Length: 428
Image (cartoon, rainbow, N blue to C red; front, side):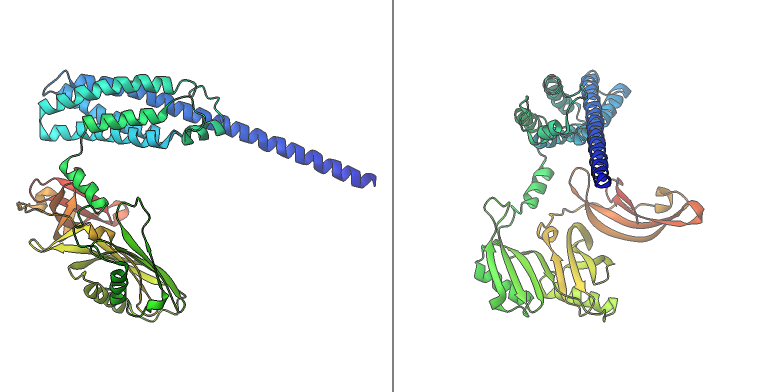
C-alpha cells in the first residue's frame, strides 16, 4: 500500500513538474514571440520615417544622381517595410491594404526612372509625402503598447482578428485604400488584368443548366445523365458558373462551367487506378485529341511532369500572327497512366484570353548580347507579361552556361523584341 501511495505521489509530482515546465516553456515562447513582433514593429516604424524622408528628398531634384539615389531608397525601404508588416499578426485588411500601397509606391519610384515624366512624378510624390506623414502619425498611435515585448500570444491573436483591440485598424485600412486610389490609380493594364481575373470581359450568351449538362456530355460522353447533379455558384461569386457533380461506376468528380458561354473552368475525377499500361507518347496523344475535340485546338505542348498514377501536361495558346506562345493563356490537363482517361483539367487561364498587340521585332546578335560562355540552344517568339502587366512580344530563349564543377546550367530567358529589355530569367 505504501509503495502504491509513493508511486501515485511520485507520478503526481512528476506531472506537476512537467506541467509547470511546459507552462513555463509556453510563457517563455510567448515572450520570445512578443519580443520578435515588437522588434519587427519598431523596425517598420523606423523605416517608415526613413521612407517619408526619401520621398521628400526626391522632391528636391529634377534629374540628378540625388534623385536617382532617393528613388532607389524608396523602392528598397517600401520593400523592407512590406516584409516587416507581412510577418506581424495585425488586422488582415489593414496589412493587405498597407502592403499594396507600399508595393505600388516602390514600383512607381522604380518605373519613373524609365518613363522620365518628372512633372507626373512630383505630383504623385507630393501626395504620397502628405499621406505617409499622416500614416506615420496613425501608426505611432496604433502601435503604442504593442512594442514593449509584454504582449501575450492571445493578445497578438486578438490583433490579428481585430478582437478587443484599442485601435481602429479597419479605419486605418480604409484610409490606406483611399491613399492608393488617389496616389496610384490603376493603369489600363492593371484594370484589364482585374477584369480578366473576374472574367468580366466574357460577353457570350448565357446558357442554362441543361445546356451545361449537354456541354459536359459532349466532352465526356461516357458519363450518364442520371449521375449528374447541377448546382449554381454561390451568390457573391466573381462570376456565375454551374457546378456539376457526378458519380459513374467507381469514379466521382465535378466540372465547373461558366454561365456565360459555357466555358470549362475546371474538371476533376477520382477513381482507383490500375497498372500503368500506356507509353508516354500515347498518353500525350490522348491529351491532345481531347483538347482538339473540346475546342482547344489553338494550343501547343509546353511542359510535362508525372507521378505514379498520371501525367500532368501544360499547353499554351498560340497567337496566329507571329505564331507566338501566349504564356498567360495556359491549360493544365491530367491524364491517367492506366487507360489514358482525362482525370483533371484547369482552363481558367485560357478563358482569360489575353489581348495581344502588334510589335516591332529588332534583330539581336545573341553572341554580343550574352557572355561568351553562353550558348543559345533554342529560340522562339512568345507573349509574356512584364512588371507593368503589359503583354509584350519577346524572344523566348533556352540558353546554357557552364556552371560550377563543370556542370551545364540551363536557363529560360525572355527578351522584349522591341526594347531588348530582359523581362524574365529562370533557371531550368
